[in-house]
Amino acid sequence: MDWQLGEEFETPEGTIRWSVLGGGEPMVLVHGTPYSSFLWRDIAPALALRRRVFVFDHLGFGQSDQREGQDLSLAAHARHLTRLLEHWGLPRPSVVAHDIGGAVALRALLLEGASYADLTLLDAVSGGEWERGLFRLILRHADVFGDLPAYAHEALVASHLRNATHVGFRPGVLEAFLAPWRGAAGQAAFYRQYSQIREADTVGYEHLLGDITIPVRLVWGREDRILPPRYAEWLHERVPRAELHWIDDAGHLLQEDAPARLMAHLTADLPPGDTP
Image (cartoon, rainbow, N blue to C red; front, side):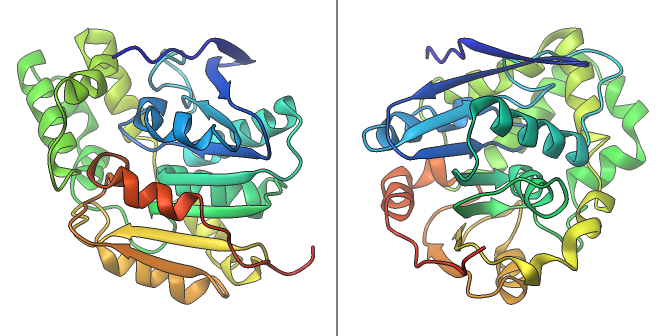
């Protein structure tokens, strides 16, 4: 499965790779962990029939640089997103964010001065008590996970990825998601990024969620085992006039489980927000 990001954005800690498809009003797609922009491989070209779509891999992920000493916190990713928007000359794009990409997009909007036309959050980390499951274990025992034999590490990552889909991956997709985390360097990169993702970086903006005035749409898989529906309800209660849409028979990865229904939401118009 060929998915290549042909452009580069340099940061002091490494190169972020990105690409743009199509033409029209801009839309930026933000992935989460342990995924990459490969997650948007079907969604981005379809959106590009009517929008100018920007995709990128967070530093430490996918085709972007992975190396020791990188700051891979949500706060750092939010700063990088804000700088990318400036680099692309996008003062008010539409933003679609998944998983920890939701927290990245919210931090950029509420704390880093980024501006969006509208925001769509898909099964997204946003706030509350979300350090659970694998996150919590890695935070407590990062050294143990880092020392796993390669076969055990790969089995763990593959199992975690499978847990995110309700209907299962199509042939070749799991292998593509696993590829950046294989080998000694990939294994180190996997636990490096997980060990830096903290609730503290979402607590910092939670009190500002009620101040959001742009249109916000929440789209959630009812069978999400990573961020179950209560996380959607938590966020819906805190963001004024946010729309909440459920997708039945879909898990954490709507892009894999229900791409057609997801596209219907992403191409639907949002009601106007308050004038900034």
